[in-house]
Length: 144
Image (spheres, rainbow, N blue to C red):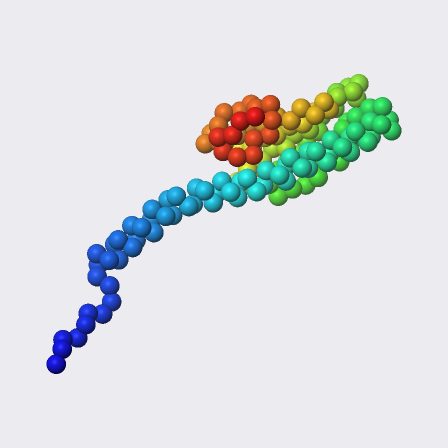
């Protein structure tokens, strides 16, 4: 009669498996977080571009980017960004700004766009690099 084969896993095998899982998680989680952040950036930049187009349409009709209420267009609401518009007193220039909401994952991101099409990143999370940049930064350690 043969002896019964051992059943289950040894403590060493479990510890090795946990160590491998921890290493994989240490690599995968930051990459996934960056991927999620990069997914929200186009929400800001495309909205800024659409707002600039609407301001240009208003300028064609009224020869000014502003009206009696300041900026000639209403700012949209978004889950991750707050949008602002500033037009100068003469109505001949504007600055659109998308700032990450302080309660969400995009809190350290700020993007701007002006009437000349100058797109800038004025603030980034420290891990992504130091702003300002004369372009929209869409991924970590990126430059213009």
